[in-house]
Length: 122
Image (cartoon, rainbow, N blue to C red; front, side, top):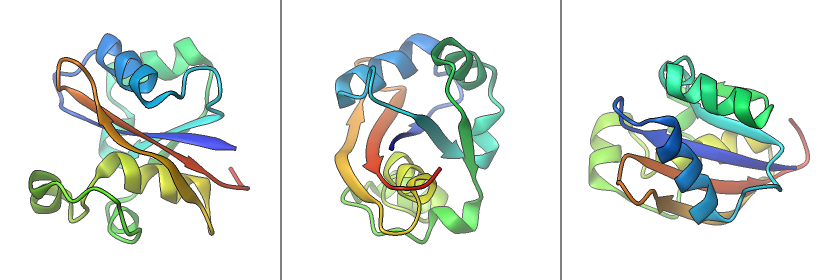
């Protein structure tokens, strides 16, 4: 399975999320979406998930701090305690032994990030 993890600003729209996924190379191969628990309920993310007909994994704040991320963004470290919300969410949702297949990429409008992780569980 391939999980697309997302980090995004509160003002991000559905188009930003689609662009980030496309830039990460995940369109058509992703089997689940993941993001921080507080972001999972955002209207844009919910619409995005419905458009793709994919399940959403809402990752709790403590869990986001666990995985080692390839990216070390200072703003993400300060706000969430992880180098990349997108990478951490993807790794958490993909399960034990998951690996990044695409590190964080940023949407053209800089409102959303996406990373892909491969794992064996949902």
